[in-house]
Image 1 (tube, rainbow, N blue to C red):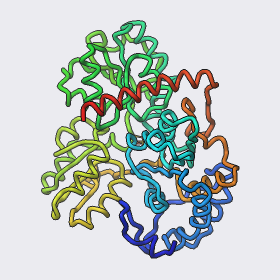
Image 2: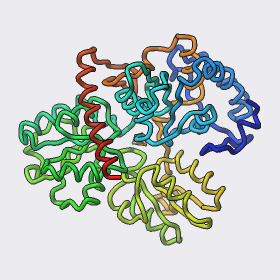
Image 3: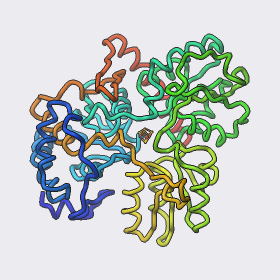
Image 4: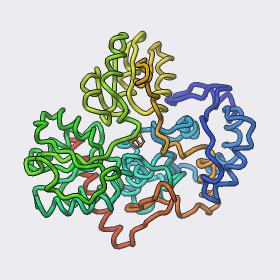
Length: 441
Ligand code: SF4
């Protein structure tokens, strides 16, 4: 493939600009697993990060892997990937999508046998949960985690769910946001609950309400609250649980005000990237004549003041379907907004990041998802080359029920029996979501 082919605008969503760096920051060498370090060393020795330098180096590893695996290989990335790796994945025929679409990629493409994901671990695990037996799922960096998921590890959630079950019995129904490990999705399945995404959360919550259930919404307090308000739930019946990182898990349900009247209990987790948005930022842009769109992982006040809110797919499509001359401030992950800004400019639409509101000392940067950005070109090149050579580390192989410590990279894997059980329950929760979503649409 020539550089011209690499650099041209194509049918792809993204294109690589000549001479513009395609990666923002290099990771230190000791952040790489030992078998990935030779690739990282070569990458760090490249003269710069422009497509002209990076693509030929990537080609030398990725093209042999593409030839070797042929149509059985599927490359995936999430919209929030930093370092513009989304562009690289797409250049090699991969798919870039949100977490709902990614989740279905293995099950909907049975001819793909080797699935390589550049995003966070829970997304790869969800793909693995729905995968067919003869498909294997790999993550380019197992330490790529999610700050929200880190606030709802199974050892934090399990004891609280047990206390809630003792108190409420079969009335309790768990809704697990997609941004959870399979172990939590399995709890949702076991309690008759379902998984949800930011776009289908209202349908899932309404489905639970129709059954007269008491909902535990895990892990994002903001998405839970925004959804409750959206479906018209009385906010007095919405009860916030403590944050496990700040407040621990050694508290009693009797300490929680209003728990017996609660229709929905909100787990105290949040996304570090989205929780910073405020109504002041929204109002500043509106006063400047811009429309504001925001992701519902953001605080309620900011969402209520915005012109529109919804999933990454909603944000992307709303902006790019707008007429030329439109101006949008978008409140979500920074890399996504930067990519959207480039694509929108091609259509004469202006995009800024919501956090760039000029609020003096209160101004904060619109950050990217730092944990997802732990996937970079050496991880992608190394993963594909090691897979082709049959030397891929087992730590990068993702099975349902795996959890990884984002700091140490240590993985906990269930035994065969436990995994089968977990997979069945997690799958149940995912399939309920798919059915409810399809029926609603
Ligand atoms: S943007 Fe937030 S919720 Fe999404 S993967 Fe990153 S840390 Fe998790």
